Amino acid sequence: MIFYASVIFLLIILVEIVPFFKEKNKKDGIKASIVLLFAMIPAYLFFSNIKVYSPMYLMYELFMWLGWHYPALG
Amino acid sequence: MLKQSRTISKMQMLFSIACFIQASMLLTSFFTPVGGSSSWLAVISSYLVFAVFTIPLIMLIKNFPDKNLFQINAIVFGKVGGKIVSAIYLIFFWTLSSLNTKDIGVFLQQTVMTKTPTYVTIFFLMFLCAWATRKGLSVVTRYASFFFGVSMIIMIFSFIFSYNLMDFSYFLPILDIEPIRFIQTTNVSLNIPLGEIIFFLMIHPEVRDINKNSGKVVYIGSFMGMLNILLVVIHDTAILGEAGKLFTIPTFETLRMISIGDVLSRVEILFAIMLMLLLFFKISFMVYVTTISIAEILEIKDYRRIAFITAALVYISSYIQFNDSYIHAEFGITVAPLIWTFIEFFLPFLTLMIFIVKQKYKKGSEQTA
Image 1 (cartoon, rainbow over the protein chains, first blue to last red):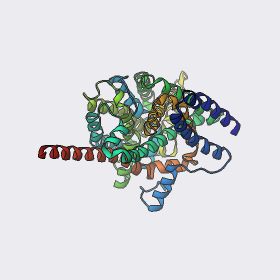
Image 2 (cartoon, rainbow over the protein chains, first blue to last red):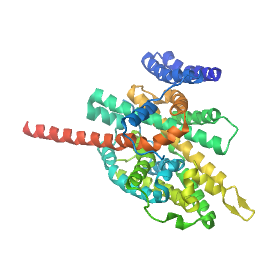
Image 3 (cartoon, rainbow over the protein chains, first blue to last red):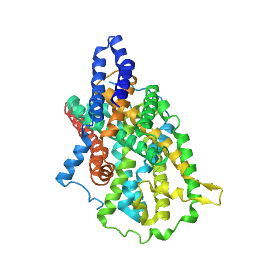
Image 4 (cartoon, each protein chain N blue to C red):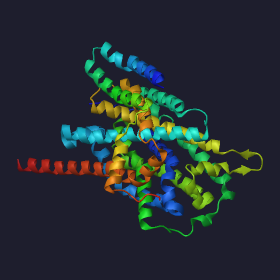
């Protein structure tokens, strides 16, 4: 999976990130690269079997811990 | 600031809202186990609550016909405050996009393509969604009326075909649940299919003449979508009764039971096709909105250039949002209604209130000057 993910990310870099730098629009290129990093880092962690927690999952845990929730089904 | 040109008509927006809400029929399993045989009443009451709660959204559209939600936030809350509020919306849009993507992946693997891994089906789906996003909103919403028509026809036919399986005594006794469970069912039904129309506040500047009759468009579109959800809930309860709680996709199970002579059986494939069409529409719309949200918050001039990056982000996060589908379901029933209410209804209400107070203060200071 890491191999396939790398190929896809490489294609995305070639199709979407490189044109920004070719057009000398460095500012937008860097911003787009940061967004891509947000996808790449969790992807590699996930495919390496390292547990990754999403913001919504952490929110769920926090609300359950605080007791701010509707009753579960049981 | 993102430039959005008027590319779609009000009719397209109306059918898009209807399709968008209808696509949540897979998620009726979030509230039917809680509401049981009274779920249909909760669905009706949720629409009544929605009719009131959605007034701030319509007023925001009327007051800012040329500004999307993030631009409104920047005007009302200021540059920094606006970015913080917009970031909350962005996390919400991104989360919902990935949760819906996960749902369609699981649905396809459980029902239609049982041997194909979800990462393959979702990959092709995301590719199509990113492609549609690159082409613009008019392409994303072009087939909304067709999808709505097809799904309505399939739903009506499946209702007729399964009429002999229905037992309307399953609806009795009416409201035989604790009040908190009824409120919970109403809240889930309010937030999960209906409240999600907050997504449309990102695209209303692209709708022609949206300042006229915007309320009508929102109410009629949401009513059409909700009608289908109500039909599904009534259909499932009348056939399965309390046993409906045991299934993750009750409608699919009810349609499996249809057999008219030896001629007509396996009607569930029609439901699968309908759901695929609707979810494809919903996810491509969500990916479009998430893309323009990222572009707006990061001030990227051309959103089309980050469509595939957003699709990759949604694709990956669909795997990491909730590793366990049981926790996903419990989140939808217990915590999501509270968080979603805050984002879908309270934040727009707060935005409108601050805007009104600011306007009054501005008028007052102008008069004294």
